[in-house]
Length: 307
Length: 218
Image (cartoon, rainbow over all chains, first blue to last red; front, side, top):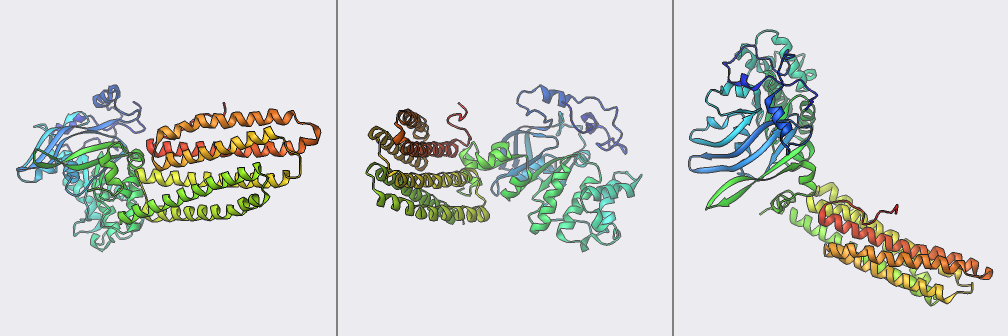
């Protein structure tokens, strides 16, 4: 498999003690070995050609106490691809992506069963550092949540906390440029982030996630609190970002999924043994989902004839 | 909101089937005008085209509005796209009927040849039947009926080739009339082709796959 981008560092670094100088996808990684995960992905017949597997999710079941949120979800997510997760309220979409960077475990009483392998490595392995996981796999939320600090300090916060103090200005600028916000804020970096518009704040939150050089960006309803113009800006940005990153977006807005995603996963609520839980119904090319879905439940949902 | 949408979609499909009925009547009237040398009926067929065109425009507008407001997906999207095509095919079929009627008027002065007229009458009946089958296949999402159109089309094509042979055998005095009948024959044969195309839209609607029933290059 010949990717257009230099491969990120080997996965075993996930389990090393947090280093101050992890070679990320932007770092000097000329000596990076061929990844086993990619070799394995290339050998698997069901991996679409040209797509490298980033996440392998195998029989994932998540429960909050006695309530099962998602049951037996298995799928693979691919690098430099935008995958949308759609489905009705309560189907476990957010639970699902929160598992991808171990944010789910911040909820008391949560139980996660099954396996998530990130680049071949068990994400929930005992020696994996969840903080490092969240650096590699960033998250952007529904409501823009900038810190009540300056624009600069918002972006610089995480790198500083991780000890990435060298070239901080350049790092902040690059993150803001990648988030398509630099031109709008370069003259007022010391001003409060809270003075930005909602759309700008959301791009700032994306810049904040990018500042620590992640490999994957998870977006949970990133545009649902934004007006159409800001929404379009975020969607354009996603198209730009997928060249370098892997993106997973949860959205209620089906047209947004249709516009931005390469692949779409449809989750639905299913009752089994008196228990309602989210299940993965269909996972396919977005165009297929929106022109000729294979499952009648997907058809019902996307055409609005659901329930 | 989606209830209104479903109703709108249903209404549009009803209008489309109505347009189809008008086309069936046009084909029948155009054929009868030819066989019975009924020039008044030929004029009616020509005027009747305005009714078909009005439906055509109404459906086109309805689909435009539906796409702009409702962003249909999945089977709804396929239905809207298929209706867009079927609408155009029906409008073209009605235009062929107009040409048949005009040629009937032009050829009325010439001396006709009964076996050629009989052959054309058969083609008219077949074209009408094919149009019915195409419309029913679409209405009932009936793939089997849609695919049956290929065999029906072969029959009308054969009749068209027969028309050529018959015209070649005509004497010099009947040649002009014969050439007009060849164009007319070709029009009826094209009506059959459009019926097959409607059947292909039925197949797309049902399966989501674009495919031509027969390769036109054969």
